[in-house]
Image (tube, rainbow, N blue to C red):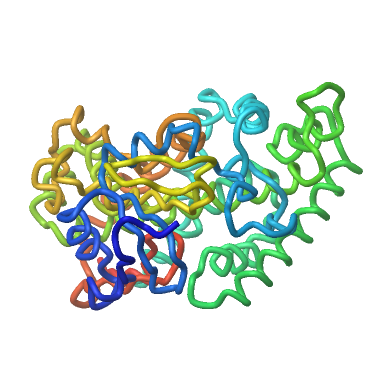
Length: 401
C-alpha cells in the first residue's frame, strides 16, 4: 500500500538534521501530524510529530513494540542484546516491568540522594583547580554512570570500558561499530551475571543480583536467559545515557539564558522547573522506540498500513504549539501544569521507570555545580556541537569558572 502523502526527505527540510531537527518538525507539523518520511540515515518510517497524536500513539494497543509485527521482519535474530521491556508488549511487558519495579522503588531512589551528592562533589573536586573543563566528560557523564553502575553492581574497574561501549551503542554514524559494541557489551553482561550467580550472597542488594534471582527463581514470572541479558543492558544504558544528556543540556540552556541562570542561582526552588523545561525543550531521548502497526491504524487523519514502522517524535511533540504556548522559548517559569504535559519520559505502559532517579540526579547535579562555581560560564561562544546519536547528545560542553 502506498502512503497517502508523498514521502518527505527530512534532509530537504533542514540544513543539518542532527544539529537542528526542529526546523524539519515545524515544517512537517504545518502540513499535518503524521507523515511518511525518509530519514538522513536512509531509513523510511511513518513519523508522528503532533503532541496529541504522539500521546495517543504511545498508549494505542495496535501500535506494538515487538519487531515481529513489522512487514519487513524476516527472521528471529532481532535483539542486539537480549530482550527487554522496550521490545515487547503485554503480557510479557507487564511481567518484565513488574519484576524491575519491585526493585526500582521510590525508597531505593530516595536513599541514593546522599550518594549522588557525594559523587557530584567528588567529581567537581577533581577539576576545581583547573578553572575550566569539558563538563560532559568531567561531570555530566561520570555522575549518572557512577550511580547506575553502583545500583546494578558493575565493578569500578569496568566502568570506563562500559562508558565507551555505551557511547558507541547509541551512535548513529557507524552502524558496524555500534553492533560490535553491543556484542561486546552482551558478552560482558553475560559474564557478570554468571559471576553474580557464582558468588551470590543473600545480603547482596544490587539490581543485577535481583535480576539473577528472578532468572533462577520458580514461578511464571521468572526471567529467561535472553530477558536477563536484555534487562541488564537496558537498565545500564538507558539508566545513564538519558540523564547524562539531561544534565548537559540543562547546563547548556541555562548558560545560554543568563537571566534564567541568575534566577536559579537566587532561588534554588526554580531548579525543578529548570529540569522539567529542559526535558521539554531539549528532550534527552528525542524519539520513542519503534512501534509497528499490528493492523491498519488511522492517526492524525492519516491511514498507516499494517506492518508499518512508526516513529513517535518526542522532541517534536514537546514543541507543539497546539500544546505549549511559545514552544520555541526556553522558560523555566512555565506553569507546572503546562510543563508536566511533556512526553520526555514517555506515556502509558512504557512510561520510564527511571524518571524519578533522572530527575533527582539532574536537580542535585545542577544545584551542586552552580553553588560550587558561581562564575560558571561558557569557555568559548557556547555553540553546541551535537553528536549523531539516538540521544540529544552534546559532544562536549567547554566551561570555565
